[in-house]
Image (cartoon, rainbow, N blue to C red):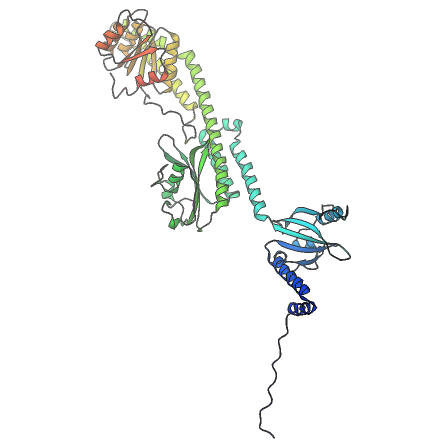
Length: 539
């Protein structure tokens, strides 16, 4: 037996892939065929890995070949199956089939360019495809089709969301005037809050939201709606300032939306909800004016993107429009209430003033002579004044209470409770005094001549007396002097028409301390300025 080692066994050669074998055969056939084969391989590789789905379908609508993207959509099983079956998008009976349309159009003439039909399919229930189909020119017994499929789910869903936001915005702003008329202002605001809360959850899928309205006078951002905010944030006082007032103050001051992907790295961010790691804040705009802010937060970093920013800005426009509509309804109700009170005043206040004047004359006559009659006259005076105050209270009850508003009126001056006596022989002037001074919160009584004015000044206290210098029974300087004697602490204001003052009443009164003169026809703001700061400076 030989001790020599066995001869070495030759290593088994690895078999080349089918593609390499085909390439070797192609090279043997010649360089042109080899080059064509390589181009075909490259094209097949590219088609297999493009982001869109590519599929070859035969006349029976069965898949003959599909790239990797399409196979992934179908769960890896597609070749040999029906096109619609593989996608899970079956056609109903009689429904349009784009493959048949391509074939019908292609049969019109051999010389016509390739026909391309584009259709849209819904597959797997909530996915959307744009499919472009052409007939594949191949030497086969039956036609083949090439379908290029582009996933448009994100685009379609975005458009559906935009459409839903548009409808929601129209519904939000389309407040029913009849329904609104039956609701109080707090009830209207609660209704709007509920609608906004519902839409932000169902459409935008935001759980933490905050809406603040800008007070144009103070610059303060008043909370309108807060959901999911911590108590400290909900009660935080914020102003429309770019510094020191968080992202909300910055957005309100600049009108620029702010996307915060990481709250820990944003120096503007102030904690709003527990564990917030990202936020999105957009301005509420109406007629190019910032009227408030809309803010949402999430516990996930980077939870909001540019698409969320677009949705939030669209929604904020709808909210601002709804707030404006609500404000218009409030203003309309305020106007209606004011008109009603004005109508009552036109019919009642001057007769009541006449009762006050007559009762004053009676009181002067019986005072010290008949105590019982004098007391009854005092009761008449008191009851007449209560009638006027009741009218004022009814007007205040009818008028809606103030709320954070997109409509800003000039702030009223501090005239509430100020007592004013207006002396003029013209009924229109006396009515106007009730209308304007009463709206500013003042208590107005009027007299038709100097005698009535002096009598009323003796038995009542006034903060201001506004008297015309051309009364039927007294000249301007005389009325000024006697009213100052009767009411030394009241501000006496004289009124005159433009023209010559033969008695030089104003000159004499100025020498005696007159500081305020109104020239008829005077503007309302001039009357307001003359009555302003009465308690600070009564002279």
